[in-house]
Length: 412
View (tube, rainbow, N blue to C red):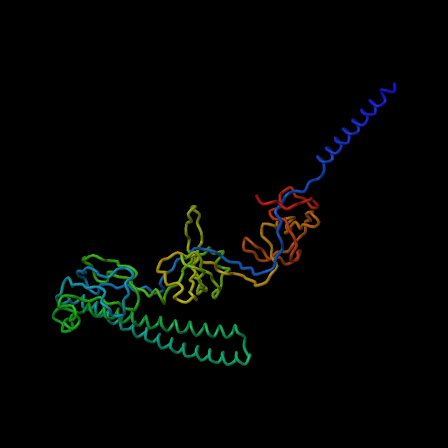
């Protein structure tokens, strides 16, 4: 009997040990484990809300060189991109019928000359009006600088006065270019009255011979497109070349959805990205078209689009590589703040019609309601409910509940 006691004691200890190990295994199996999540922080900093849309550069005023009379156009020597000066001969043509014009054609040509003369007078009057605007805006700017120096007006008011002066100067240059265009149109109209029996014909063709009519550039700029390059026969008024000033007259056209266009105001700041060069080009919204148009998207959906014109504010040398018809990505600013509380948009979710987030406190997820403001898709402004530096759950799982244990998911 004595020999059985140690054996029974051993069995008892082994049983107790096995029971203890089994209990520990069951406790470990059913012990609550934290759910692995991505954790971020509430930060403070700048936040910019933009409307992003592809745009296309274009020359504001494209001048078309046309044939003054019906005849044979000689081969055009210029190519796309060539620089031209106002008055340069860009092409030559020979009249198809160098005889005296018939009565009806001559009367029509005289009417065209009269119309061109009236248009020229109107353009000169617009130059005078633009000159008066420049003088007034420069005077206002000078007064604004004096007032700003004494602290009477704000810096924003001074900037507005400076912008108004620059805009007035730009309108004056446009008006002068319009005068040059009207003068060229008048010259073309007068050329239609030329016959071989006219004394003016010899004077007009003295540079290139008695049988050629020169076609001249109406403004300084570059040849944007050669419409007719080869020698061919054309009627009166047929386009030959398109000329524009890329350096000083380039703008950006963007077709926005009408629902986006109503959020944009003239003067809004614009950032131009993906244009092919280094950095971002600065621009502003110059005007918004009052009329929308229906366009069909690549998916076959009809959309209402509104044309928005953007004006460069960056110096011309920073965009020297851009030309007419180039693609850019326009980011039009609709709201921005330099210092605001914000969180990643992925942390917020809807709960009972309101916004909420999971804040991490002591290793547990605490659901808290928040009031959100402006957002750009990546970051969103926090108006109430969180403080700077609070840890929050990003991309909260659907089964995560208030009070659940959470832990940071390790990368990889």
